[in-house]
Length: 324
Length: 275
Image 1 (cartoon, helix red, strand yellow):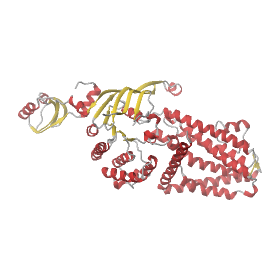
Image 2 (spheres, chains in turn red, purple; image 1 turned 60 degrees about the horizontal axis):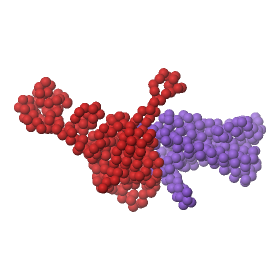
Image 3 (cartoon, one colour; image 1 turned 90 degrees about the vertical axis):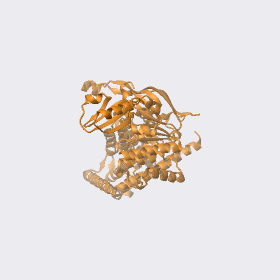
Image 4 (spheres, helix red, strand yellow; image 1 turned 60 degrees about the vertical axis):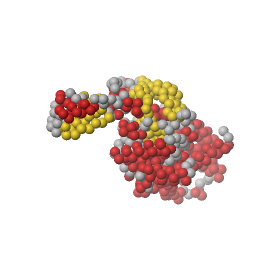
């Protein structure tokens, strides 16, 4: 039986923001109003789960993650992670979690990764044997052994990010919080990081909580998706369930040999993308064979490609409130 | 709390300081060329101050009851205050403001270390303290006519403690100046102002040169006179060293308590920079 290790109940976080006034009033008598970054959200996460927190910018996902990792004090509600109130930041708690932020560096800029890892070894009280084994294993998995003695400031973003991940896992945490871990990385680095996260999650049953705007991260790394919008949860279920609502939809990309008007293409399905000599249309899965046959018969088709509705669009529909 | 728990806390803090010193040392030596500029600038400042003191005392025998030789000792303590304050306190405080401003504090707060202790001790510039402070202070040491000073061992011991308490109080004063960063998002200039008042102007005039109300204000509310002016006065026996010791001790104790309370308040209001 699974036991939740992250329990959030009616969590709320308000910030004070300045109300716009005249320059002098603003300078000497500023007025503030409270806005909710996270508004009355509740969820549980079991040990070993890999969960993605999704939402548009400002939805409250990073704020939620920061409250879970003990960085922010909640305005109201209950948070329990591994039996601790995170904001107490007890050493016993902090030793059991890890945090990686795509646009923050936990590694000292002027030192080498090895020197940074040695400091972490002292802080977390890692034994020599475990330290050497983990550094060896993790750097090998991410193929970054050769950068261990290079100054961090001289590493590329991708190399640095992989070494940030190594640093965050040296103490073998039970929960790893990942805030946009692949932001700004090239596709090769992204793929490497995604497969690394999946591998360590399966191997060590670590619980992953991820925020990302890259839907490929979510699809490859997470089993469960929590969608937050305007500080509230609008979806919380498994990835297949999220996709199920869109299972009857397919996207068909047509590459044509000569120009055809949009009006003609619209007869076969709703146009979702248009380029010179190429259209992407939305069709139903059940009528897929017939539609393709009709297209082949009536249009000058050079190539045809069938794809699932991208996760980005599913999420975007949720944010805009469009029916699936 | 049991004695064993205290021992384990002390042990952990000692290990943090040990690791941080090594960490800071590696950072300091990563840019060797930069260190030479520090040595030259500190030496140039000291030599110009020595010249200034000589010129001032060319026309007068005493200032605020301090002879030329007393003033050199005063200047020596002032320099020690400056170097101690800069390398043990200000570097960490500046780094704290940058970390809060840019959100890097997030990465520190999730480490299993006592955050306040770690943040104010992680960058002890031991190497630079040694290489930059040693040559200039040596120049002052050789300028002082030591046999001519009447320093009793008791006053010297009191003086050392007063200096330590003064350094603590000054650190807290500057630390409090950094905390508005939690609300304003930036406080570098406030910290610089506190540093200027403290290790700068607070070390320019001997204690006896101030009126009583100013002695009180600058020894309590803005405790910038303790590490230099109180110490020099106590060592030279110009004011009761026991009285100054007690004063400095009480202020340092209150300062440490205020530091903890202010930190708890600030960290509860930490909003973390957007990411």
